[in-house]
Image (tube, rainbow, N blue to C red):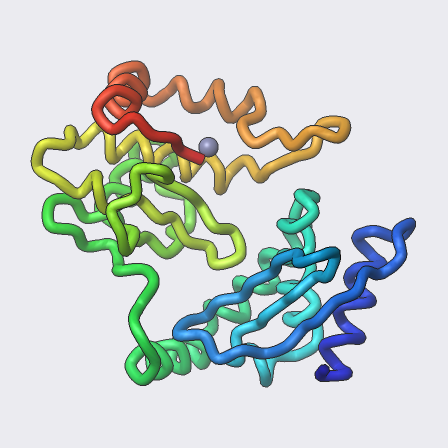
Length: 234
Ligand SMILES: [Zn+2]
């Protein structure tokens, strides 16, 4: 195993969980088709794969992504500073150029971009941003999902700063307010990061729910998504 990565893992683990011993782990770079990073637990062993696009990244950036992954695994809150540090690096010009090249040369894309057959997610974001946030929110990556997921209609991925909406909603029969509501909900997740209340994760805190009420078609949108698609949303 890469000694530099192993050291970083140990340091970050100790910062996040100072009172527990470091578990058995394996951490390595992996040639994903995209800027992917994964973490999973198998038989008590923590397995981490970092995109090989990060191989040349400075230590603080690697520490940031390891922090994000470990926090996700253990459902700890992600330190916003680490999220910003990671995003800054991956959003840099040099990184975008490398990613573009990799996408062309390696496998298929996991996300498909903001332009659908019926709805354009960036246009929807920009419009909501103007209407509800004085145009002040920085737009994350917006993408339709690759598959027609009913299980997850929308989610915000802080590690990759991406809002993904299920392609199932990119249809003429789907009312615009339903797509707008999903994007609006995920925008609120950007504004209200997951917090811990006691030992409970608070995904939709009170301020979140209050702000959500500003959406004019809230009840219809929820009803539509619940009955027409019978699915969940994160
Ligand atoms: Zn949510």
